[in-house]
Image (cartoon, rainbow, N blue to C red):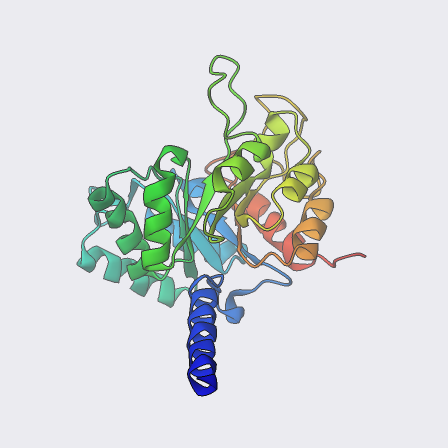
Length: 291
């Protein structure tokens, strides 16, 4: 009986270990680190250009990772081919080859809608898995049950993104980090937040306080520094030149042991932003944490 109980204990322990391993955070390879963080570009910063050009410009800025968004034209040679989770294996292979050429790692995809319907949701996660992405960014909190199932099946993380508070739509709650905590409570730990610091600033929230609320649930970040606080028309400026207190944000992420990607989503000077984004990348690469 003792031997049987011992054997059962070993089996239970092994099962627990497998469960913990299955829920472990997906890791970005170390060679794509820039200083203390995995910093690169959200391709939306280059939405006046193609996917290929977004990859090239990310490399030009010194970024090592990229976050794609749905609907961007593939290339100058194939402008009618749209890059999203419906892409063919041939198109995916082309993008992966372009990424390899410029030594850029694709780590995230969004903001993209994830439907409740499993068959449709699966397209997003299959795409992410084929690209080797760490995470997907969405605002589809209504599909949380389907999302959790897909996260467990594909081992792809999901971050809920925040846009600014909407005066004419009080039902929109994504801007509030407490709402994200409410949605993700008791859910798989691979589900959390894509922390868009700029939209918090536009909503009159202090990013560091929001990050502390979300501790343990931060999957990725769209890091922004804005020229004004609590203004809907505030625009991006290079890190350290605005009101967002980027050093404090980076220090908080570092202290939390954040291992996700930081995307520079620069929504200003659309066709001439490379020098400003380069400043942002350099700022993060040279950041030194303080106690």
